Length: 204
Image (cartoon, rainbow, N blue to C red; front, top):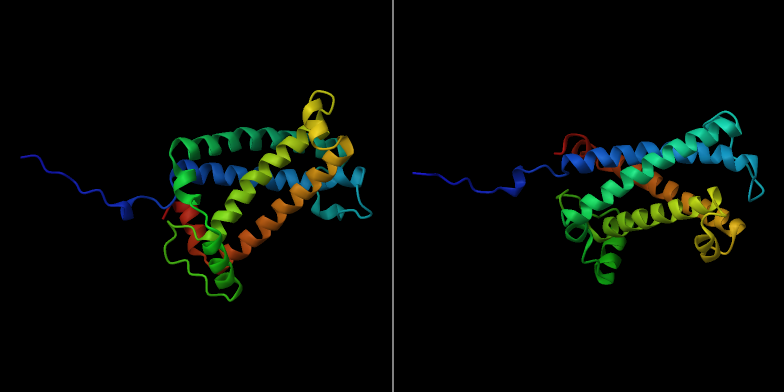
C-alpha cells in the first residue's frame, strides 16, 4: 500500500538556494559599484564635495572604471536572473503583495517605536515589502541612468527622458544614495535580528 507524505511548508528553506546565491552576488556587485563609483565621482564631482580616497576603490580613475564596468555586468546579469526567477516562481507577488497603505502606516509606526515583530521570517511586514520593492526599482534606475552616463549617444531616448547627460549623472548619484541608505538600514536591521542573516546564509 502506497503511503503519502504530507507537505510541510515549515520544513522548506525560508529562502531558496537561488535566492540566497543571487542575493549575495548582488550585494557584492553593489559594494564594488558604489566604492568604485565614488572614485569616478571624485574625478568630476557634481556637487562641492569629494569622497575620502580611503573608502573608494580603483586607486585611480582608469582602475575605478575597470572595477565599475566589471561589477556593472555582474549586477545586470545577476539582477535579471533574480528578477526572472522571482517572477517565474510567483515569489514576487506572494512575498511583496498586497501592500496596503493602512498596513504600511501601522508597521511603520510599530518600527519607529521598536515594536515591529519578526517572529515569522517567511512573511514580510509592510515596511519590508516597500523597502524591497524600492530597492528593485532603484537598482533598475541605477542601471538605466548608468547606461546614459556611459553611452549617452547610443541611448538618446533614455538620455532625453532623464533630461540630458548632466541630469542623468544627478539621477545616477541620487539613485546610488538611495541604494546606500537601504544598505545601511538593512545592515542595522540584520544586527537587530541576527536570525535573518543565518536564514540568508543557510536557508533556515
